Length: 447
Image 1 (tube, one colour):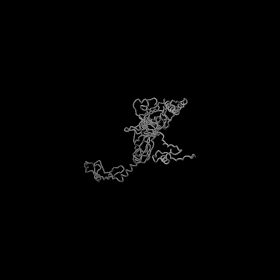
Image 2 (cartoon, rainbow, N blue to C red; image 1 turned 60 degrees about the horizontal axis):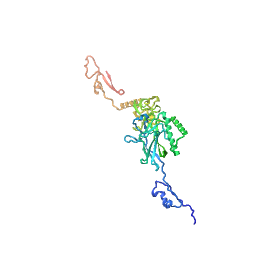
Image 3 (cartoon, rainbow, N blue to C red; image 1 turned 60 degrees about the vertical axis):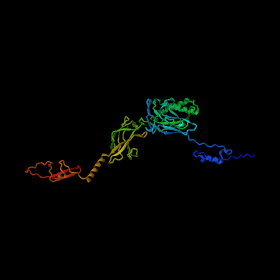
Image 4 (cartoon, one colour; image 1 turned 180 degrees about the vertical axis):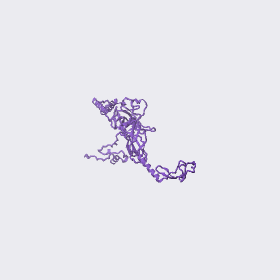
């Protein structure tokens, strides 16, 4: 018998596409045309499985942009927590995350949240994160960890989060503890041993990093980022299943470097287009090195519409009084020849984060020289087009009586007795003229 040593026929099977199902699937068509893959002599092939997307964390609801950081001594009573960005009295929502594309074999996930100075998992923040009902346990002092299951859609609502100030004396120890926790977890994963510990050399290295972070002057203690991670816990070892995701920055509401800007009172609301009018305003706390007063004109009546003109008011750092008041002089308007008043706005502006206050109304009035010109134009217009006003005398005489040629300058409503016949009296001739400059009548009398 002659053995057939020819190689089995090759199959050109297209790659698997999970979106093409049923009779449109190329794997199904290949099986049908060849009578089945496993029926071909000498060919043993498996149908390729669809490629899963990696697991990831989705931020369903971002945290609010500003929140008041508190001290540990303030936590004795009931205080507010971090709300969602779209929180209001009718829609009370909180920061929410969801873990997607979790592998089928994982039904429970551990989600961890911490504080960071920027979007870097190694930049731990010195402040602490608390959560009602969770952070009281000692092992949750540096991070907040919550379990979620597949039945819940791997979704976690972070209700009751708060941020606690860390005093300067505990900054280095706080950073050291967090870095130690992360380093120990990493070593447990690498060795697959829940009893793994760090060596003395590794601990010294982490301590030096914590000391260096403490001295870093660029660390902003009044702004934090929330960072989330998801783990699959096996035999007390946390295996990371997705990358860390960061929230938008949260700024300290009551700190003058990051809080809201607000004007509470203004000494005057108008001034000349030439500028240099002194104004005093009361404000919420501001930093004198990081504050400006901007005047601007908008295209429409809405202050948020595009700006046509903008200028800074004039003041120095010494004009900022105890962070609560500013004395400044108005800038000149862009057009010094306006004949009518112009409505503009002014606001507080913080260059460091480009924060702005609610705008206040301000009225620019025409310059004094322009006002005199307007009066002259109105006077000449009246002289050429308006008739002279009617004659009026204190004696109550009518216009026809005043124009009579026999008017006596000494005549009044009650006629005087006639002079003696022996004394000749001449009758005066009266000529009435109207002076447009003084807008009065003058009488010339000829005897």
